[in-house]
Structures are given as structure tokens and as C-alpha cells.
Image (cartoon, rainbow over all chains, first blue to last red; front, side, top):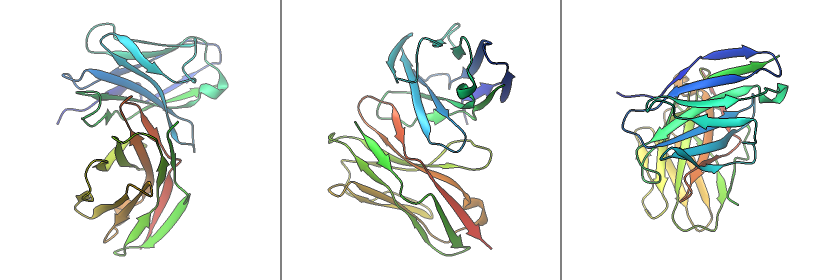
Length: 114
Length: 113
């Protein structure tokens, strides 16, 4: 069964450093998402991406964040200068069509900012 | 703005018994989807069940069923014959035309042997 994959599973970084979280969505999917879950809190939407551009972003997704689909298979989330409060689990999700189909979630990347 | 509320931070149920997790939501949309996701200790998000708002019939998936009350904006999850593997965090979630999923804060379910 096809699945969304994410790498790395755990990333530790120093405050102020740049990190790139990688996701490989399911191959024929068209819509891509990033969500964040701070430990012990709910999952929060960050950004959605379709047709090589951001379709929606939350207020969390400020100028420190960017997304890219560099090669037609990977979908990346970059945090330019990490802050302590960026420590969280980051989930990538993808879906075939925007509304009617299930969003499949990846296993998540745990980001720890020291 | 749409909101999802889960009023039970934690619940416990005896193995083989039935438990109901509550969820309410607020929206002005008429077409939307509701979901229950399970998050085990591995923290993977697993879709348990989903309900289309235009369907009056409550969704069921094996031991999992929902009680969808559209007028009351209520969407509870019933787990029958609870098993140890059901222990997890359960998130109620909402999705409408703008695509993103909005999650509740979750209910941690403990299964007592």
C-alpha cells in the first residue's frame, strides 16, 4: 500500500540554525500539507500546496517557513532560523484531490531545537 | 472560524467494554467532513473513521462507529469491545472546502486489562 514517508524521523538542531524536513508524498497525489504538533498539544495546520504554489497558510507559517517541491517527488519544509518554540512533531500529508479524498499522513519528523 | 472541541482530556475503559468519546464543532458551512484520527505512542496519525456531512447515516468501521448529530454539531466516536491496542490519543477533526484539517485537542484513551 502506498504511503507518505518523511525524513529524518528525528532532527536535533541548535537555535538559529536552518532545518529542512523532507517528505515524499504518495506518487499520484496532487495536494500536499504540513501540520505541526507541539508536544501535548493539538495538531495545527501550517500550509497547503497545490500546483507548485502555496494555496493556504496559517498564521504560524511566517517568513521563517518555506515549502518547496524541488523535483516532483519530494516536498520540503524549511525553517530558516529555528527557535526553541519550533520544537514539535511535523507531519506531512498528501491527498489525490483537495476535498473529496482522504489526507494520508506521514509518520512525522520530531524536531528538537536546543 | 471553524472550531473543534473535545471536552474529555482523558478516558479509561475496561477491556472488552464500550466507550464513547465526545466531540463538538462549530461551523457555518453546510458541506464538510468529520474525522476521528488515532495517534498511538508512535505518534503516527491514523484515520479511524470519517463522516460526510451530507450523509444522514452514521459511519461505521468494524468496532468503531459514530453518532453524528448535524443540527447539534456533535460527532461522537463509539468503540465497542475495546482492545488493548485501542489505547491511544484520539483526535476529532473537521475539514471543509478550504481543505485544511482542523483538529480538536484530543482525548487520551486508556484501556484497562
